Length: 157
Image (tube, rainbow, N blue to C red):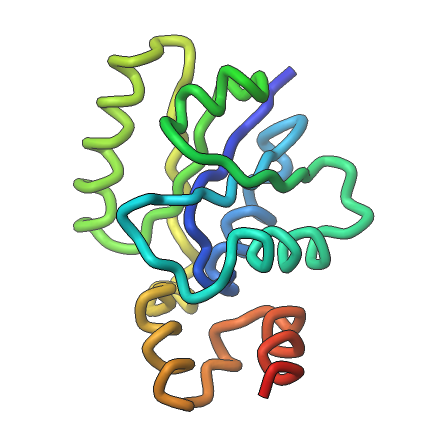
């Protein structure tokens, strides 16, 4: 069984994240979206909120699961039985950073392979960091966000 982990902070979930997941579905038997808790980052949205967004977006899709995790991604792969890690790439700089992580993961566990998917060009400019800045400064980030996230943010205003 081809089980894939798509790890990230997803703070917030963007259309770029959804694009990568949707395009990866035909490649794997199961995709686990791993909402990471990172001790070095202070998220705008709780891990539980980020997981809930994915659960709502992919409600009814038996090929996709969502989980919250901490620690090394390769350890979470072992725990979940994932033998692939999925990463989205927007720019060459993303690739250089992601390749360094993939090389480290491969050193830690040779049985886990990292797969890179490039974003659709229309999502290249979407970065969670930029979206957070727009939200923080009361700008309109709706063009970057799934409707579930927009509705959630609007209900908190």
